[in-house]
Length: 113
Image (cartoon, rainbow, N blue to C red):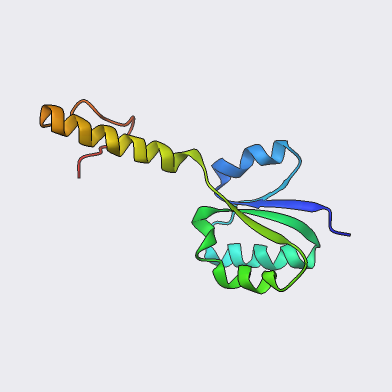
């Protein structure tokens, strides 16, 4: 019976899913992520959410699972892409308005490029 749901992604992202009762996997590298995908099939997972950072590198493994009934592999995104995109827009607007990006700094990061 297929009844388990998994989430694969970076540890800071998948931690919250564990609180919802999902099985979470935070692979340290691509090889570990590939082994995790193999585990999903062997242990009869019904559904697996894979963070976008792993989608492309695991394309071959995902394609192999498409031929199977389960698990269904679905990608997901997180807020960081949107936050970075908005930050870049604000930086560009600040540079156009003031000639400098000194008004836009991200906490803990030097954003000058």
